[in-house]
Length: 315
Image (cartoon, rainbow, N blue to C red; front, side, top):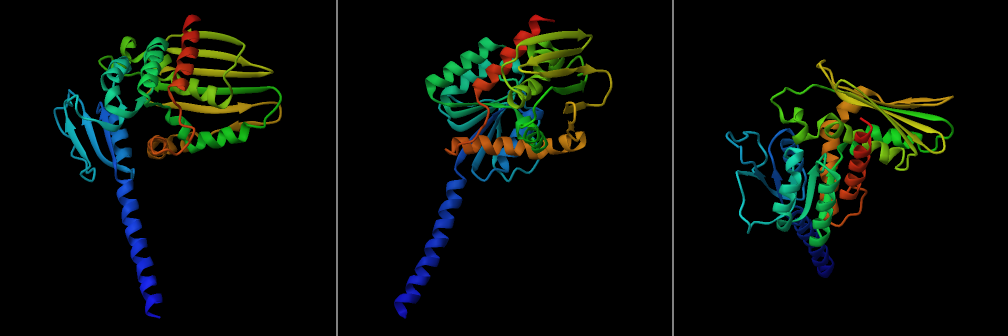
């Protein structure tokens, strides 16, 4: 009887110790976020909510006022780091034109780098990023957050068995950024085609396919209309750009002879923050922890940039 009780107590103790060990194992990743603008804030917030992340270092040379938000004391702010410091994950959330330079700067100090979209300003830069990542054997991810939006996942699931003539429509029109903003500078952001368009270009490649056989592009002021033909009989219509209205317009739907499948715009926007961003960061962390998933890597970013480059040729 004594042995039975002893064994029972031992098993209880072991379970408690195992639980403590599991918690310690969870809180073991050091993360760095480069750039503390809107996306840098978002990445930091989502890393803070991830149980595997132990600490978050924010690098931003332009920091003048520290954020007072309560991040559970995980975060420290700095304007630079030394070459001796290393991190498990680095998120680069700076203007697009700086991504390649910063990737080269920090690639040897981490096991994984997550690049905010677009991953680079050009296909050439993205390929160099891929080469460096391969040489150093680090994970290079692309922050295509719309892939983690549950409404878009539902849409993809609904259309997977559709046959016949199908027309897809992707629209993303954003309020025109202020002239002093770096977003409005095409040499820094890539302009609306790259900065906005990469979301839907990636979604087209992910949802519809990658092998189109014809392309037609028209540009009107700050808007671009692109039509892609996919074999055997699918047409994808992409409309994107800026307008003077303060309203953000984002619609996705497809229709054929006997169907019309449309995403609920309100749910699409509501699901984006914080849920889609949290799934994106959680999935990237899982990738580093050895859990296989379908997180978009730099190869997907290169594919999207290649299609954008083709579209540019017709403008």
